[in-house]
Image (cartoon, rainbow, N blue to C red):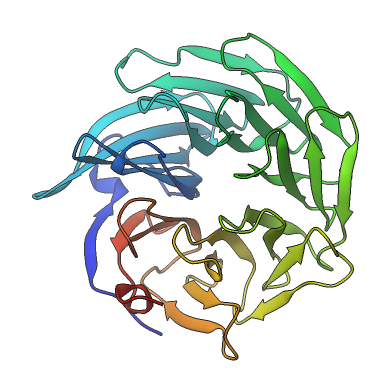
Length: 340
């Protein structure tokens, strides 16, 4: 186990409003080099020499989206938004660094603008149960969002239109993760409690590929940034598996080491074979599936479930994570401090 030297750390309960826990993933803004958002998920952005952290949390059946600014003095609260139900995920706009979308336990999506502190710009409610995942398309020319819900459906949204464009059915369990391909326009993956990873094309109504990936619920998935055919899944069986869409009969790698469910998996934006995972075993682990001993490092600096994780798109080796202990950590693990 290792505890890396932190660049920054902040306890969310010390920042008003005080969320009870960060039950979120992390994700990085494509536009801002030092921006990070944390929700039941987390994310990162770096904009105009400012670093922001976006955090969504749940407390007493309510949700908070907190925007933290990272500067030389530390981390301070820049903006916060409250919602009347838990917030489970958040995604950055790909064409406006001030806009993001959150998903909620009341079945709705909210569009927020950090320049407008009054509340959401729009609210879209069509899902019949909790919306656990939301992702903004990374492909140029597309301004669409995909959401995944406990109602076993995924929905396609244009943020400028007040209703969903399409509903994708086929899963037989909760959809925990939906994520767009960074390579293939109109293509996204979904991971579900029905133990499958599914690949969809918005131009066709049915599922393209069904992969029975694990013998347990799949909680997270991600696309490789360097190979359009490669994805990774993380599941309740404590493992990470890699899948090549050209041959899905067997995983291309199987990474074991976590002792509880894998909550979040992320491919590195800088290395084709490097990825990170966080788990309910309180750890974050870094892997290189091309090596004989793929586990590079285990970071243990939380005292509760680690749920949010992201790797900076702009600062090489910088990682952010968050957990139910209310802590957000920004750091560089030793395995990423030098070229891999």
